[in-house]
Picture 1 (cartoon, rainbow, N blue to C red):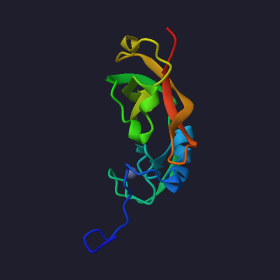
Picture 2: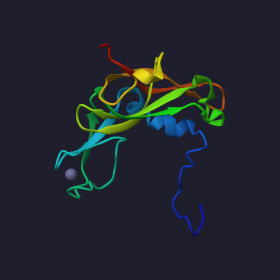
Picture 3: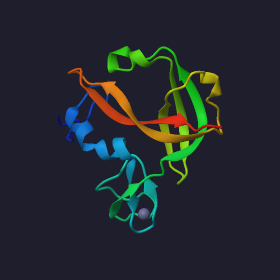
Picture 4: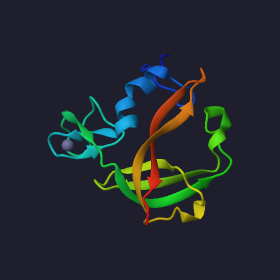
Amino acid sequence: MSDQFPEQFVRWDTFSSTLWYRTRAARYRLEGTRCTSCGEKFFPPRTGLICPSCHARAMEPYSCAQTGEIVAVALDDLGFPAVGYGDILPRVQAIVRLDDGIHLMVDILQVSDPGEVQPGRRVHMVLRKHKREDTGAWVYGYGFVLEKG
Ligand SMILES: [Zn+2]
């Protein structure tokens, strides 16, 4: 903290066990928040913040849909080994529109042929080993797999 940055901020390139612990409901169950006034849904969850649509301050937990459709796909075959993803290459990333309208950027897992990951394919959420933290312990989070057919 300093005069220039009076609020504490999180460096996303540094692993924080406490941050990952606090966000476990979102990572394990896709738990977001919903505005109790206008009903707009948010993921990642907004807590203690003003709803951008109606300016109300009341949010409640909301379980996002765990199925959806791929909107866009990007293949990552370089990776960022320094942040724990180097051992799951190629990494197929996609923008998924959940059935309740929320968009997420996710990893598509258990893909034998990256060419079969196309916009329009149905996917569902799975709990997966997400990455290794600095201590070597695994952190779990959500991923998505293609639905059959
Ligand atoms: Zn609202």
